Length: 325
Image (cartoon, rainbow, N blue to C red):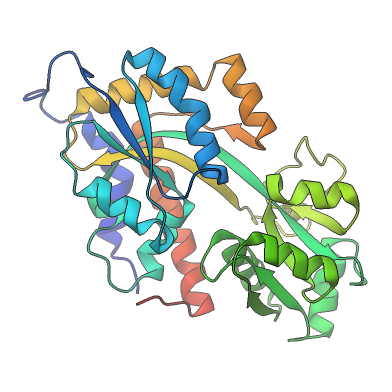
């Protein structure tokens, strides 16, 4: 499915357009009761951990509890639907993430979607992924992997934690940019995918750093690249893939969205308080331990970022021929 340009432009302009909205009909003294933050994964998942890291200080700044409501399923669409159909009053928020941008193209039929039904509020963080190889694969660098893959088309198994998620699409982007052929072999969840890589059943995988680091440190798998534009503190000796493949960049990011038509004053208040939370030393330390970097800005900044991510991953989904009914 090709995403209408006007829909992407609408998402990009979403934050900026808030500035021009009339300041009418806004509940005074927001918030006056608890706020629900709907999270698209179950308790204990990496996004849930980050949500809980920021929820407590955000609650303190707003003067009302921020309650986590885990709604996993359908690649993030169940959580998205719950928020899109909620009253646009700032009391039901969505933990927005990369899958929501991917799903705009991945799912052929969506009753609600990110550009049409969610207004950008605030970005939170982004996470690096690592390019990992099984120890038996005779490559130690990204250029060596590219050369080996081109010399052995279709003979490298590229695993992931499931079709259409970021661990899969990071590999599809790599294939698209390098012209290599690797066979995608999805597993049900990252633990199974990690095991496949460790045993040599799979050869290559892209994995978020918090999940990858224990295995890299144990020496059971090798990290030959990171997916951010520059090297990361946790693996300072591992090159960025972009050092040999310019413009390659993949991060798993999180932010906050609200139902469309949420009043400008509410969006501005939430954005201001979230940006303040992301300057808190304790929050920064906890995010660092979770393998995350703070990522703040205005609603307009976040809207432009979401539009760019939606367009970027739309190209990858179409390249890979992925489709979910």
